[in-house]
Length: 187
Image (cartoon, rainbow, N blue to C red; front, side, top):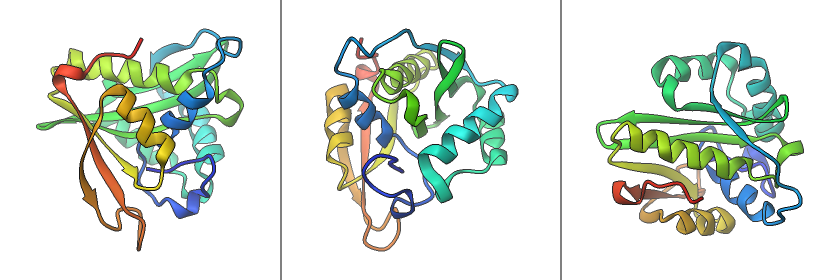
């Protein structure tokens, strides 16, 4: 997981997962800043904006455009974009496998943080995983990312195991899991 808030992107490694959700949820407490978030499937024409959001969120650790296209080809139904007004504000990517689903990446453009975009993306992802019969939703989160850990616990995610050096030397992660019986959006 990479976090584009208080930690530099270079300290968090190449793997994407859902840490931005925690920051987004904590910042979205004010109903005055909230506005309608429309969630839609990713379309190829969205790629330039997704790469822009990726670079704004993760800097030099940003995924290249081809990686997004490959993910879209592999799992188009769980590659989602969030719009506020006429602009794409964020995206999330999950993939199904024999164990359930993995939340691989989520990012919200800095200009749109604190408006409930990440929560809307996670809620839509949970609904999609549930529709596809996913047994669970898994993710990786830095052991030092207290806001993300709190956010995921609010959704019902449980820490399952410690993964040493997941983000590189000395940078560990928790494997977290949300069981099928809990795959319901928070709203």
